[in-house]
Length: 510
Image (cartoon, rainbow, N blue to C red; front, side, top):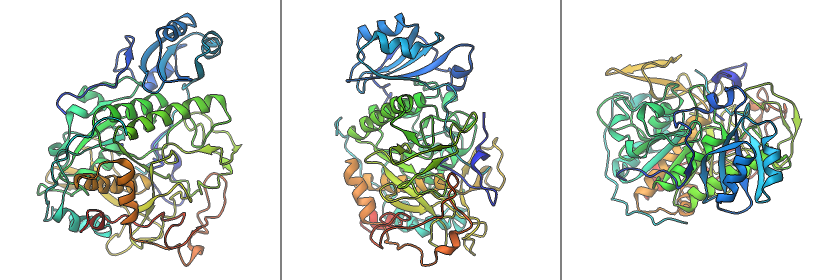
């Protein structure tokens, strides 16, 4: 299993490509596999593999379940709303046997050996009424270190509207540390869950963050204004940990599908996604296995969106133009990567799924971070993710973003306050949560439809032109194809900055 440092550039560390009363599980069929079984365990048991089975129409019929059993598989979770089943089998050639036996199967693909990792340097259902957001003025002890919040006018915004306690942001990540003093006041236990292994498990021990990445992103979104540590963009909203990344930081497809089905079924208004999903960094629809998994995840994301969930996703740290991909040397990232030529028939999920708010990263000098991927059509807005190479300033002396961190997890740059631990990181992982927090503030104003939330975020962003001096990016070509970074578009919209830098104050009408 690869560590989080797999995608760290030689010249510096970076982060991300590499998140009711009693919550209801998504309407699903369960077939007796313990919910505590992880995707890693499932893929390494002798002979047993996990499969995504995609059906041609919504629904997973009794006949289809019998066909799975006849082919040597067991359905462990089914999502009839989107025509997807999660299946385990130790039968060789199961996928081919199932396709031959059941004409309703559109595709079946094993997820074994096809994890994806975060990168890190250390309208359907009825919409519930939103309680008005309340102000959260003032400072906590570490706010002087939060240059990123000042840059998007978050303190001014929360002084007017710090968010509503009836708004829940689902952080689809490696879980969160619900004991952290800056997160504990806002954790929604009723909507938190582990999806590792593909089966929802609400035991808090299952969705506890033993890695750190999820706690860091959650802190940026919703760290409480409580007199200690830092303050999140939306300190009055609730945060739900949706653990789709295992403790090693890999996001298996069955966990990603489960996460979005959970969000869409449990009234979660916003999700943050600081990872790339699917077996490959670029998932190509002309490959049968990749197409089945991509389509299953796309359907799950669409289900969440149709049920009122605004989806925010980070663009990645490959310095790559997602609008013009040519080569992938990263995937599969938990085994032996292979070099393959790719085209626009290949996409990064979730950032390139329709309706998703894609986020690139910048630093304190207001230019795109050296590592951040970008691309016309993929990026909606830009937000602070840090830049330790090009953008160290007096306000950001190490260039990175500070946020919450589990006390037991290692951190290369720790900060302590009142017994709580915080850590500096950089990456588009850090940029996305700023936008998810702003989206939560927008929802707290009563705007709830995902398309309308996205429009508000985009239309209130601070317009930013392409950099005047592109030579600063010359030492940082794309990781996968060594292409020079290029910025296309004008001040209104361009591939580096999208519609501009997200502005929390303008987004709430301040």
